[in-house]
Image (cartoon, rainbow, N blue to C red; front, top):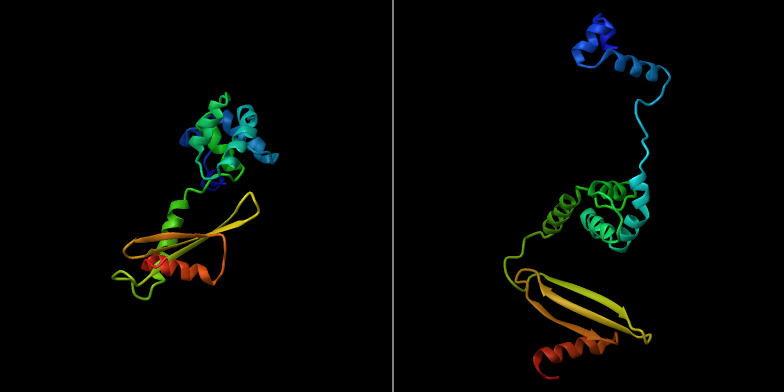
Length: 178
């Protein structure tokens, strides 16, 4: 298109762009037949490693491609780091490169949620609640509390119940009456 508009001959054009004329003619013929200029190439190493890499990646989703690659090598399969990364990327099992940036943006938004940033202790508290089922069929509940400004962590309260006495028990333990 550009060559024709400029009125440049094919031999002069390929000389300007640094491509052999034979290559240019091959590209032209493929374009006229609507064939892609390259690929897809066979990937025997990747295809052989796919089940093992996928198994390790699903077992440990937080791990990156280097650890997955090392585990695959440890299992006796010869694969490169780049192949492991490409496999994980193809299967959607790797975090995007923008992951840390997104985390920082979320942290910035959380910090901006305060109308006025805390300037001292006892202004903002963070709470965490977890529930764990036991092998006997029971449930343990764990509650923790932390000061946002001072980062003081109060002892976690562990209880097999979930009733009004749990809060009372914690208050008595803190005051030394338990």
